[in-house]
Structures are given as C-alpha cells and as structure tokens.
Amino acid sequence: MYVTNQLIHLRKQFGFTQTDVANKIHVSRQTVSHWENGRTYPDIQSLQLLCDLYGVSLDDLVNGDIQSMRGKLLKRGIQWQIFGILICVLFTYLSLISMRWLPAGIAMMLVAVFATLGVVLSITLTTKTRNFELNTYQQILHYLKTGEVAPNQTGTKQRTVVIIFSALLGAVVGLILTLLIGIYLLGWSF
Image (cartoon, rainbow, N blue to C red; front, side, top):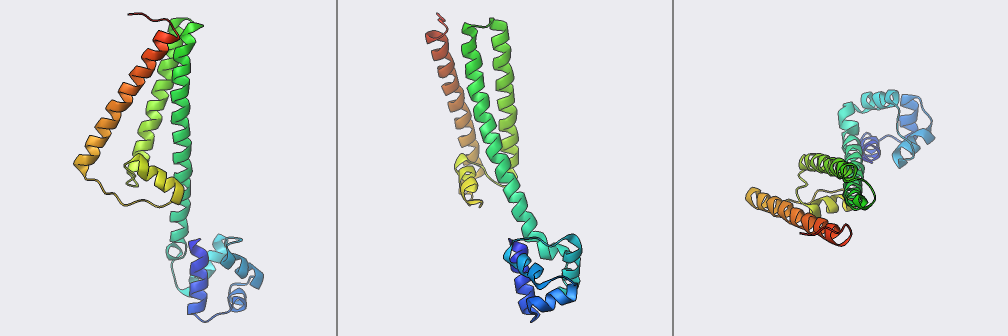
C-alpha cells in the first residue's frame, strides 16, 4: 500500500529509526513496524501526528492508498455488474422458455423485467468504465486481471464503429437465439 511506502520513505529521509518515530508520536515501536509492514493502518490521530512530524499534508501521505482503495472498489463493482448482466441474460431466456408452462403474459413480463434490468446494468457498467477510459471488453478484462488501465489504442471514430457493430451483432445473436428457442422449444411456426 502507498502509505506504508510513504512512512518508510519519510522516516528514512528524516533519519529516524522506528523507535524515534514511536517516541515522537507516542506509540510503540511495534505499532510503527506494523504500519510500515502493512499489517495495520494508522488511525486518524496517528496520521495527523505523522503529518505534523514529517511536515506533509494528510492528502500527500495517504492519497495513493485512497486511489488504490477506489480502484479495488471499482474492480469489485465491475465484476458484480458483469455477473449481474450474465444472470439477467440467463433469466431472460429462461423466462422465454417458461412460456411453455406459464401463461404467455406472465412469461413476457418476466422477459421484459430481466431484459430491462440487464440493459440498466449494461448502461451503468458502460458509464462506470467510461470514467476510467475502459472502452473495450478487452480493456475491462485487462483491468480486472491486473488492476491497471491498458492504454487506449483506438480513436473516437473507431470506438464508435466498434460499439455500433457490437450492438448490432448482439441484437442479431439475441434474435437468432430467441427464434431457435421459439421454434424448437415453444413450437412457434411462421
């Protein structure tokens, strides 16, 4: 974590030992050691004392950690949203198949609910990842694996074409899958 590296760097820059720091901010040497090893995190009072000791702002001391925590939360959120979208797609098609046993009106309402929820999750995911310039599925996967944003190698026009092509491909695949379910499982005829 960033703050552990900062604490070590600042302590060495000022020529202090862990015992010196502990005595100056009234904690044990083990506490300072735990902070520097990342086992524990300084409380707000200790952070303020450390800032005063080293003459740095709280933002300078912990900003990297805040960015790291935001990145981890974003990563977890992206994973849950992708999982939610996949579940919505699955339940949309299961709802369509349920027309075999349920009245058509109820089954179609279920299809509409799960499809709408999936679209809302997709839009939310797109908005969330756009803020971090994660524009393609490959960039999102790279971020989920490494926690780093891959450089964007496509221009705005190319991105727009990819988005439109992906949307059309998704619509065609969805239509084909719906027709196959309708014809072979539900007995639709034209």
